[in-house]
Length: 298
Image 1 (cartoon, rainbow, N blue to C red):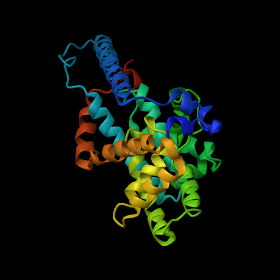
Image 2 (cartoon, rainbow, N blue to C red):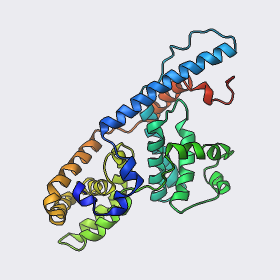
Image 3 (spheres, helix red, strand yellow):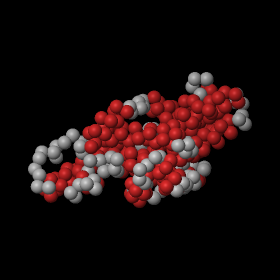
Image 4 (cartoon, helix red, strand yellow):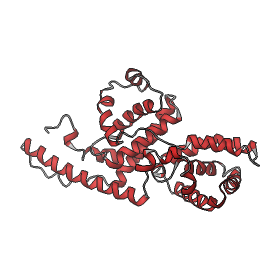
């Protein structure tokens, strides 16, 4: 919704997400570039200390470190794996969305050179089952995901919670999308097309979750954008525009402009392939922070 409209639902305006987890695209990259630069300096320092302890003196400080874009690409791949795993293990969309956004928040201020996304993914999923009131025991969680050990999941709980600033509740687009689905039925809407479109909205939201959009826009805005994407093929997107114009009055032009930006942003996104992720992961193995490696001399 527009800034003036979305301030009406105080439950969101008063949330930690509204106050602390909304950024401009420029702010996101400033934070990421700073985190990556600091990580590289930290890894270089720790590698040097490890070499001194091992009485080694090889020229590995100038190794090829990951860029902020490569770190993000690897995180995106594991966010996608989070969606696949959640669906395979029959976790709800709410749990999946919360876990994915947890990963985004954590790796905004942390780096894959300190924490591998594969490990953070599992802890985020476990925390998400709690925050979405679908809690399962750690033993059942381990069995569900066929884990040899749940030690890492538990060991990272506090670390991930710190990365989230202990702000666990997530507002994501699924709830407002359902609200719009119900509200659209009260107006001059083709119900058959609406229901056909709504079946595709979940897929559109899943695509939105694999981008920076949840860190930039509000859930209701993303939900309406998901309707626009889902209704493009059957023409329902025009009915969505009419709904917005009728429902939001003088704020409709601003809201439609926001939705156009969201839809345009989605068109620029290319999913990270497994091959790309493997290549980045191979590079990562050579520049992980030795201070985070239990086998390191540090």
